[in-house]
Length: 513
Ligand code: NAP
Image (spheres, rainbow, N blue to C red):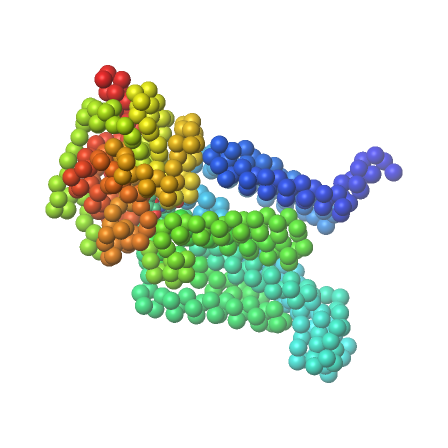
């Protein structure tokens, strides 16, 4: 036997493939640990990517993998679309990107389930026919996919040569339904965040929940029928369509402010559906990777829902949701109160004579890419003996961890970043809260106005500070589309302008003092 032939046999051994999978799993978990902190996040991401590359190679080594031309074509198309998209995406458009990529995962899972169903000859219970020929008398009561047939014990335990086991059919149907919901829901989330669709809730009103329930019941009924042995490709397609409509119907009524929770939840759905496909295809890599995504996505969803004081079932049912245009919310300039504007020079003096300054970054800092300028300003202040820290709201910006990533990129020491629960008790002993491009996450309406769409969301309580400086370009609202009372408080002054320019100007003024 030639050396190449023996090497091929060794590489394709099941035990070798399993060793590769175990290495891949270890790298996934190590990667996930790295993602827990901004300083190790890049390394963690690369570690998990290497793990995924090993898992893909291990799967391709499998002797049953055949159509190399199609596989190469799929990889080439995926890379041609994915690599430039990931390289060019702006940091501020990252949530849409996550939604889109997540949706593609769910869609792939749904398609794989459909292909598997077709492979079984349009019925998960193909084996039933074989036995019918053998002994028709005992077969109609409990025909089961996977070839285990039982009728009141008469034929219990008869194994057939074709048709998948029942659990494979169940997991395939589960993956198809959840993957389809995730694909369509993620596309709607993408459309809303990309402003292709209106960000406000689009709802059927009082009928919404009934419609959702009917779609869910129809999808489940079709799934049960398929697992029970219905011979119908049309039924499978009908099930996918019901799940697709449900994905649309669940996400369309959700307002923009709740979108991060929804994206994370759909991400968890995709993970679970991928794990189910892994069970159906007997692929351990899919099971483990899917469960990691499903579990971490579920934990993140819960953390965000708690941070925004939202109940996950209520979000899904459309019971909450920040709207893009809120009834009764006034736009720019409609508030009766007075706004005090300030200049970079005055802001610099106020900051220079403070003992303690807390910087509150938000989406505007990300848009302006002001993080490096902010870091320079911090250094100037620290050189003057001012104690500076950063208060980070869990949903500031447009994706979880958005502010942490930006500030880590600007080398802000990690110990200066305070999560909301640690930051809030510090505001009463803060001289100046410097709000840079943050709006909703500081809006007191979340505490004081029960009719507000963000009511109940915990906020950074900047108005507990002795004074507040807000940097933004205008009086326009933030993501939730609502007025911010903070701007009318006597202790607040507004420095209008682009965040990067304004922060640089303050730093320049400081250096002159
Ligand atoms: P925000 O409420 O969206 O407000 C951002 C503010 O930045 C705007 O009012 C805008 O005012 C200002 N701005 C924009 N460009 C600027 C620039 N170049 N320079 C200076 N200011 C600029 O942001 P946030 O306080 O960070 O709150 C996040 C919101 O996004 C929440 O409603 C949250 O629910 C939602 N969200 C979060 C995530 C997540 O996972 N983090 C994902 C999706 C949605 P001007 O136009 O007047 O400048």
